[in-house]
Image (cartoon, rainbow, N blue to C red; front, side, top):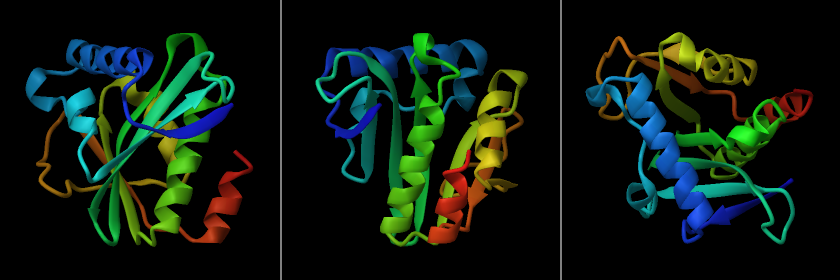
Length: 166
């Protein structure tokens, strides 16, 4: 697998992000959908990475995005694995990559919002395995029965090394 920073210019990436947003709208009430489309993910404070089968970009496997809330706090804004690549470690690799980047940026905290229903249980379990804990709403979010907020405050190198074992 090859992970690289992405400018969202490849039609396959746009289709993956757009499909993710559509699915979120199918399983979550519209007012509780916080996923971003391709245009919003191009914001200056958001970095997107894509996972490919090889450096030649033969096959898109997934994507993830990290937003800088401030100099000490980041937010995972997107995580999506392509349907044909589920349960093959793509999300784990992307999450590990974003945590390392958060550490490199010297964030003290990395947070996220995900759904609270059973549809999102695998995502919540993945984040928990990496040390994310449930927390209250942050950075403009409000309490919502359809949302689970999680945060990671141990972004040091030892934590990153522990995550390699996953």
